[in-house]
Image (cartoon, rainbow, N blue to C red; front, side):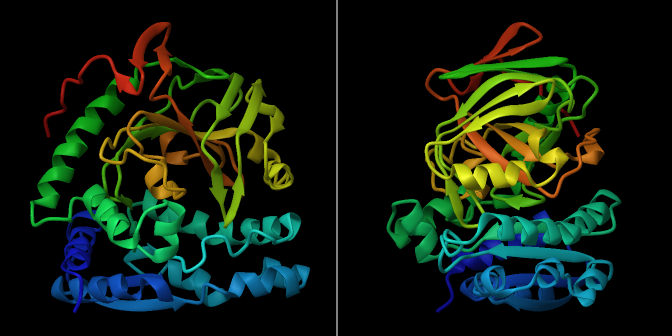
Length: 375
């Protein structure tokens, strides 16, 4: 029997996240582990009058390609994949892994090359999203591997995921996300008037200039769950030090206790307790990999624990995250890189954030409520 929570999640993605309309071509990308959710998305797409189809990916293929492929094969992007990005109207990406650490032993330089090649597709997708030509939403389907990373039973992890998306019960999930959207939009508008942020915490004193950049409210249209406000900082004006006490997960690899020092927007010193070789490989991916492409406040307070999954961890209420690499052009960012790596800084206990010298955030909370935007 199908899990009714998956059906409710699929309806939320199709109706609210994608705003799928009749007659639109709707592609669903999923690994085998995510097929239960793919089926429900397919059903929801049919009910919306769209033309859904499912692309099932083999999770094991990168495990074969990285050690066995030639340089040309690592760089290869199927022509049909590039063409298809331009033909679909809506795209749902399901994240569901059977083995979240499958690439732990991969050679960093070869994995780096594969990541750079795949960025071609990602960039084209975001170009169409920014132009209003494509709607896209990414969502997780709970698996035993994800539950194990989170140190939870599968049943408890499923409830955690569905609660964060507001589909655990038969409450009005759309109404919740619409209300959240208004609150986040108000906060984004306030932050849009700030010139500089100073982030202070354990082993952290970082200044980030955001003047002239637009802040975006992440309210469930591109990710589910969601709950953050973010922008792309001025690329040449980040300075100071920051420590990421949470492990950073990327492409199946884990880097522990990262410490970075910035001068004139560039990482000039980087160290990690574990995974330093992979950290260095990613920083060496290209010139833009050593600059920040994103700074964000995590504001989903129903996500209250670290699970080693960035979809949830970057939204933990009371944290901030910073992405090394590519920026969001639609927000004014100009940094270009094959990398976009989100690193989470836990500010819930001792953190403070100053906006143009004024304390605005302490111990994971803004000090003042927003004046909500009326739409």
